[in-house]
Amino acid sequence: MDLAQGSDWLEGDPPACRGAVVLAAAEGGDRILRLLADAPRLLAVVDRRPAQRHLVELKLAALKALPHAEYLELAGPRPSRRRRALYQRVRWLLPRESDEFWLARLGLVDRGVFGQGLLERRLASFRAFAGWVHGARRVERFRALATEAERRAMYAREWKTWLWRRFGAYLWERWFDVPPERLERLLLEGRLLAPPPEIEASVFSAAKECAPRALVAGSPEDYLPTLPDASVDVFALGRLDVRGLEAEIARTSRPGAALSLVSDRAPDVRGFRAEADPKDAGFFPGFLIRELRVT
Image (cartoon, rainbow, N blue to C red):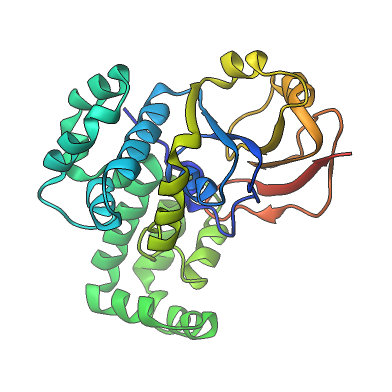
């Protein structure tokens, strides 16, 4: 089973959600917490993959039951030998189906669910490969550099070994399924070897206050038809494929509604128009289209 952490790794702030009715893709769950921290009126989470919905249910339960430091232990960004015990403290808040899902996968809980997504495992293996090729000390020196200019100089001076030139591009493309030049740019920006992003304490605290406003709703195909006309203010859809959903998105959009997603093209949703050029989506193929609004 592969968890697809997805848009948790997107750069920049999430869409503005204060007082809004929000429909969001589940993906890795931490982005859901960041949306909650902006105090939406309602946040409905959808995803076609049950595993992703169970992951969000687990993170929401941990948000409600645990303090910030213990949340990070259970989720996985911080080391812990008691994740199973922490799970026992939050499982009473899980729906039965999600509890049964995680009870059958306690090994994932022990390892920290944050690091079990396909992208996270690939990033971890890339970091291990970089350490094997260049040595841990050189990698740490590279990570400690403060500017792109410094990283670019060290990269040209010390990283472009024969082994790296011979196999680097091939391995990058095989690992991440995006062009090597994109990954080289992420490396020079300091993002490719950076530690996984954590939920900040202030964001966690704000999200905890709004946790009752979150609903894990099911698949978008099942949930969207149940919504009234003109009832959604923000569609934060991450990497969700919206093909086949265009008519329902248009029907449920309020005047002025915003839509953001990662795609290599603007979606053909009636009534929406782009207000700005799309931004690069970083680790993911395509672009972050964040400024689509109902006209």
